[in-house]
Length: 433
Image (cartoon, rainbow, N blue to C red; front, side):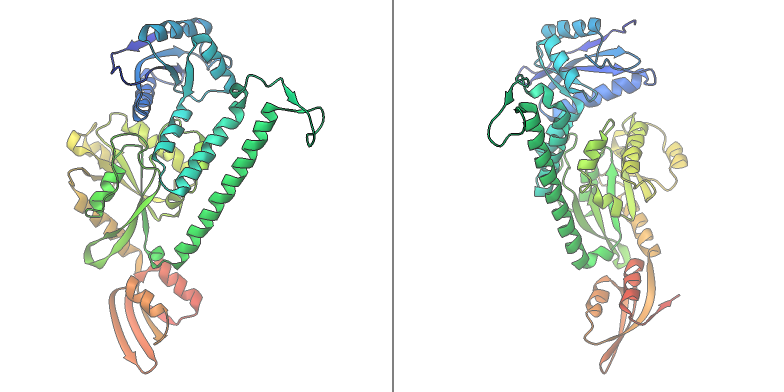
């Protein structure tokens, strides 16, 4: 098979670990797609404090099951690694245990793949108990099929009291330990999820429409949440995956409306399904949302590919049919294509600069329009000691009260989902035009 040589190198700071990127370009991938993916890998390495000083690409029908690259290209990797004095080889694809082992033997260097780098970034940014448990679970699930490369003494067997048969290999022992840990982590995460659901049932704001900020990593979602909430500070960093634990804020709107907006972890291309599954609880707010605010860095020439990656993850978590508002961010940096073309492709989209708070009012107005559409006027009569009175006063808009002995009659505009809950209580009320 003819090998295509693509080697790029550049100088970097001496105090950062130097790494060399490698990637297999399959026939269905264009040169620009491969270049963009490697540029993204470089940013992932940068987020971890490493510098990718070069990259080598091989065009193949598929990656070698044994060594990822072909023999000749792997020799090129070895030569480039010595020339550039790199400490690690980083693959743009997820590698098997055998591929990692053989690349390490061929180059004499440690090897990391895209998934392990993402996991390391997640681990660095998890701050809540739930987030840390999710990272630990994802790491164990990643390690399970790669235990083979972690031990050099797997042929040894241990016998003795309490062990079955002639003995148990170290690999079997470690698999058993990991399986137990994964089971316990899943149980802990289930408990946290159930606890959150119970707390949610007690909170009055569960009846307010939930809007989730969704988008590619580093699209500016946290900056936008700060702009929408009028100064409520969510930590912002210029890097990939800097938001892991979901953050929600109450957003005040015009005409007395309010809603809950949740920030979420950024998506990325080549995000393994196992990671999406491990972080299901973090993505739960997206599934439960009534409206998704899709935030996109319109200054990035690859924004269309990023939107495709977002849609792919939404499909995986069964949230792709939610109502969406497309928000094209970073217009202060200039749009990669004309606003007219974007408006034709994404009707009703909003162009903003979250950092400069440009057109934030237009987005808030669109959210308020959805709030109006999701509310209904009712007239209800309740006993004067009913706990529903306090809820209606908190959730209602344009509330009018008429008290008489032992009862209160209330007219108010309320969320449709709250009115649906009222029907289950047996309360008598009338919907008004």
